[in-house]
Image 1 (cartoon, rainbow, N blue to C red):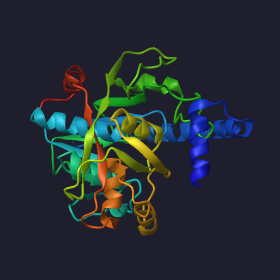
Image 2 (image 1 turned 180 degrees about the vertical axis):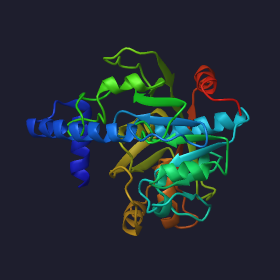
Image 3 (image 1 turned 30 degrees about the horizontal axis):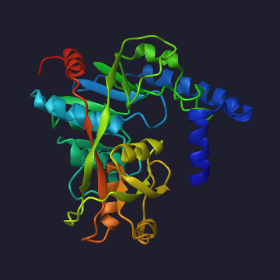
Image 4 (image 1 turned 30 degrees about the vertical axis):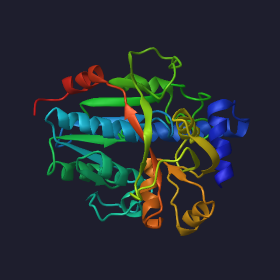
Amino acid sequence: MTQLYRWLEELWWTRRPPAPLRLLSVVYGAISRRHLRQRASHTLQSKLPLISVGNITAGGSGKTPFVIWLAKALAERGRSPVILCRGDGGNAQSPRLVQAADKASDVGDEARLLFELAGCPVISGRNRIKGSELAAEYGDVAILDDGFQYRHLERCCDIVLVPAEGVGNGFGIPAGPLREPLAALGRADLIVRTGRGDAVPLQKQKPEWRWRLHPAGLSDIMHSGSDAPAICLAATGIARPQRFLDDLQSAGLVILESRLYPDHHRFDETDAQAILATGQPVVVTGKDAVKLKPLWPAGTPLWVLQQQPDEAADLLENILSRLPDA
């Protein structure tokens, strides 16, 4: 399954897909458009002003770090943000406020990471309408994670993140990474290009903002007291893992080996033991760390690549201008 996932991901971003996949994309697109129309016809007003952060491609657009940055930036401006997260990779159905004792397997890896790093309440659960009602008890503005296609809720600011390298081969799922046609960007309030490097122009011209992350060293989430390594084993279960490997190399690390798993992979004891058995220093992303930490032996370092966002004051001001006064 892992090999199939990696083949499909490479196809999405580098090559023209075979005819059977292109046909499936037509079917998927028709079903998706129907669902989106149904959602848009039953839109509800959230109890809180709602900022949606979403994408038009499947995975790998930097939503989670962007949401963390946005939550902290809003808090610094005196707002009280609450994050609504679907809880991918977890078991939560009814919305719940993420607590310190919750595991990634319960609330999802993204929800757990957002709880640890965003510094604000996080609500995880499939039903984000009820989640938005719960959010009103904890803050004055809601951030809807992965919300562009979730059209059940009105939003005052619709942000779409697009990777700097573009939209891959330009085909829809499953032949390519597009969740919707590029024309859907017309309903976005802000298009934000993420990732490093020059942004590849999109077919549909619209004003764009840039938001980048830069490698900022390693931290040991096990607090073992060990010195940061210069060589490592890279392990990750995220979409488009090459970006992580590139960031490690940009940070000056030599990658001796890489263990790549599907996006939202649920690490288990077998995975952890196999990684540990190599005897090499292990570096992971924050999303991987929240799942591996409960499986990791005390006193053994587990390194996380930290990332620092660019200053984006103009972008923040544009977002704030779309919010009603607190």
